[in-house]
Image 1: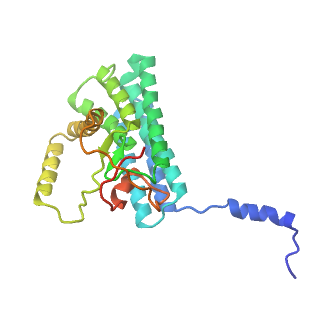
Image 2: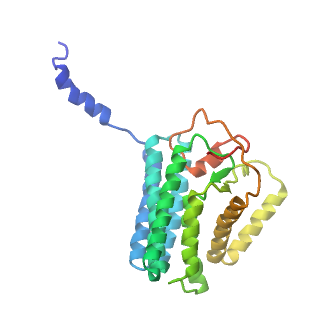
Image 3: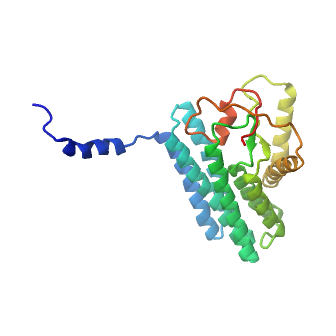
Length: 281
């Protein structure tokens, strides 16, 4: 006997099969860890425990690195993973730092303070959306605008640095200026070096090891303070070079024939094997 069901009766079963979806669990669990840390950072900021909030953002950045690397190693990149990662990044590196900044430092400014924090979140969302739609036409060796995890890292390290130095953060005009600066450089077209061409798996001149050891020593002297100044210097140097149009001129590149759907900005650093190209429009 054949199938006695009519096409109308078979339709719900076909629809259920089509609506079912399969995802790669391991990399998306790492992305969920990123989201959890971002949510935890918000809760700690509301409770006034800003050090815990800052450390949670740092751990979120670690999870953000792990999910992309696991996806590449296990060949489990997917469009679902890319969209999920962007949503989680907006919470962990957009909303969480902004809430922490407002409660920790910008609350005395009133409306100006929370508008500056909203600007940080909005520009972070625009940064992620722009990267997603330009994933097939990207500049080699450079980011277009400051990556949102780096902006969040600057905010988190500022909490650690101010605590270590014993500085007063509440009502700091410098932190207000920093918030607005980070927002604009995220959506700018300033070129930030990604160091893709520095392949640590290959043989390199001896001076690179000396430079690496020197950086470790500098950071080890006072980690909370030195990391903040290193991250902030990275953001400021890119802005200065962009404003005065210093450095190499950008060149156009052809869109890639294939780009994995689940792609992070830090994935592009390792996956691209071509030489230096140019920025997207």
